[in-house]
Length: 201
Length: 201
Image (tube, rainbow over the protein chains, first blue to last red):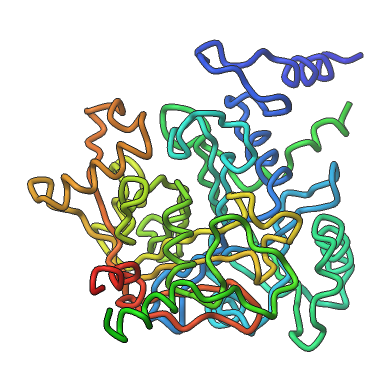
């Protein structure tokens, strides 16, 4: 085994933040590992709030509750995919102005216990970027549809005449708070490449 | 008893939507009653996503997970109050551009059961308006602090040097989906006056 491999394994096994007064929930990454924590939030949640610039409301931000998936369980890619109809303002807004953010909380997962939802140790994530329609004929659309319909069984039966289409968030900025001390530095590349380290062993 | 009073009582007692194939959760208002449903979502939830226009991210919408309260339990006024610090982008954004929305879902309350979070019968609410600082010397600040600290016990112990301040959303538009058929028409006045009908009997 090469030194590089040992380093990767030590990285993966390192102990939780010694400063913690709060036990970590089973499966929750160490808060020091920003990429792992962000990817865990995306993998575990099934819904979040997708915010767009509202064309109906004079450019106000408009947050909408939506379901999403980044992959079938255990095989998430970190990119949130959505199944939206232009009967709803979010998809209409995105087609006019793609600027968007997608927000998730650890709180509904139940692992924050009695900690307040706004307490920084109850992790929260905002992915900001552009909300884009995925070409329905692409292999990405096939991946995304499988990801969505696996996590959201009823989607495949939603009304055909509502013309639901697959959208994705192209991530440009990441805001993650999972501990005291302010947002964790985390680039889109670090976030999207998380987990791929294993393939170099 | 005047006819007006009888009408009010009949209005309050009317039976749930006959079209429903889904039993309503205990305490959940009839989806036909938009004001009651919106106020119930605000009263029951303890957190939501507050979206602002991000000055850090080129005017993108930025959704942030925040705790809130509209009053002590059973005495909510419908106005969401927040306890924010300018160490966080949301408060900074609001002081530059007040345009904001606050989004809540029925899903984390547990009453949607196995229904998908994006299914229209799992209620969702977006209040859009202006996010404003509440004058700390006002009686409104006293009401809001009581509302916040009662629902969020740990807030009173949050670090003094973070300068948390009370903000509120001045509601200008309401987007509520709680059933099939698109958003329910609901004005801010109808929403805010809900429950006050009883006082005219």
